[in-house]
Image (cartoon, rainbow over all chains, first blue to last red):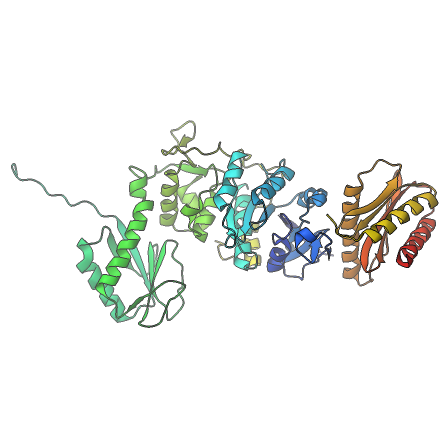
Length: 178
Length: 239
Length: 128
């Protein structure tokens, strides 16, 4: 059986930020989902990811990029680190309509604290049209306060070109490290 | 010669106007209006048909073959309506409309101009690295600028290398670097300098990014793979 | 926070206690919603029931995905056989609510007996 060289990009972020949607935008295959019925009324969603989302982009020549999405809720934080192990890059998606998006962002920065100095990362802030505050610059400022510098872009994960841009900035960082 | 004051005209900045899908009549008018309006315009505008450019001017009847990283002027028949959410210049082209549009762009460029931002321009052997992600106002939602900024995040990179790696024109790279040098978030290192020299403007920004050196903890594949990944994803920026 | 009705929560609590009492070698029992909230737990083994509930929810969901991928239906049991014990996970449907019951046992416990008790627990919760 031919071996396939695999590379992994992980999408993480709070519930409802669009991780599953983002993967679906890029994946060549219908994403494998671990969505179950949600019992938490505060989420405002019928279903929620509890395992991981999985998609794949076939590059040909035995190479592929695997796209993983983590569950968003804090109680699944053990999955965040497991899934991000040996990833080519990490995309943190934020929903700017949530009560405290900067706090959400801090949660993920804390969770990946030891990985962030060396991992290639991009931040996508969604629904800035509905909620312009906090600004994209404030997310950049939060990163800078931690001595980190990653791309922070306003995105609509329903637009493939926006998701591609996030991934491109991750690839660029990876490329610059080689 | 003594007793006569020498009059020296200030050197105007050159801006290149790339034209696409314009009619012969459009082109003739553009050329004529630029000649007539030379004194009104702050910059020296040159019409080009390929190569590097600052502003794209195109007829809307056919899609453009390139996007301007800085500005696009659209030309359409009268009554066509807005194109790409922008009011086009109506045919037949009018002198005042064109000169006003170009003047407005000149005002924008004046805020971003390399000549204004960095006395003497960028050092030829300079290498650059961002200490933090730039403000959205500088990137203006522009994909090329976002990409260029990404290339500047992880290590020092020179202008030529930046243009080569990003596949973005050197002019556009230089424009962005010049703007970034005014913000205080770009480290500029020259061969003569022992340590990175912070850019002139000192704003109250964060400590330099504590990213690791290019030797990443996780070993990753060679650059050929990244073009392969981009192609696989349908990204159009590969070299 | 899960918005499960209190009746079902009470039945789950009783089921957890019954399982713990009846399964020889059981160290702990946790009953969770499919989306990872613990609704009942008991036992003498030191565990974080909230965390375990989330973990078995993930495991169960991955098992469901793998079963779907391979076309073998829906999972009923998942077993994690470890060097010092065993986690037996049962996915069940109780009054239109998907629940996950996990029993932490000694290695010595007969797996078939645990399954039998878990099936009984599901029947009792549905009959209640």
